[in-house]
Image (cartoon, rainbow, N blue to C red):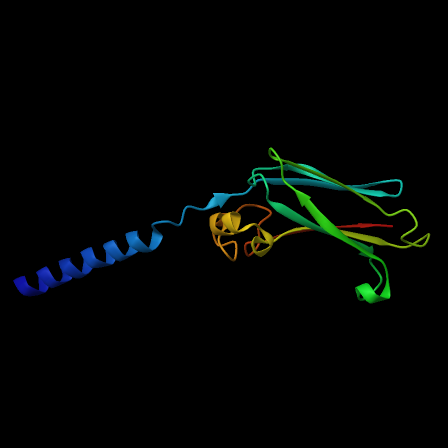
Length: 146
């Protein structure tokens, strides 16, 4: 009986140690991300505040909502860099789309697009990130303008 009690105690202690080790280093970063995406005449504006580190890259894509792929219509792409907790970008669409086109604008974050030091901090697959806008380690904000 005494042997069984000692064995169960040892197993219990081992399980606690394993749990502590497995959770060590999993300091999640709660990402605050408050974007605004809007149109001002022929310009898509993407701006906002975040607690992403300076140098974090946000990818944007603006295209015709009704086209299937980039070869079938105009697609404007680029990056916006986070600086001092803010990001701002203007995408000029003048002459790029036909009158009446429905414009799709996406602002995205992926850990794999980041400089190496940020990939390490955020986790290769965004594993260290959490927050309202974060889904599977990524952020994808989509707006449609007609």
